[in-house]
Length: 54
Image (cartoon, rainbow, N blue to C red):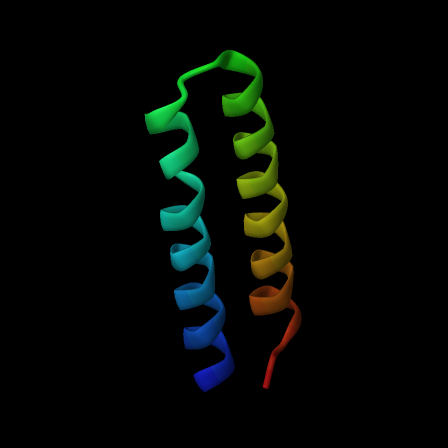
């Protein structure tokens, strides 16, 4: 259970870190890279949470 909570907290901290770039430098290419990074991290955490059935 604690690994699921820590995974979600880690994902939220990553989002908080990544959101600074598009706010400070609103260029389309940077927003696309940040979105791709956030999508890959979300997919990884989702696979981690759904994959464990214990």
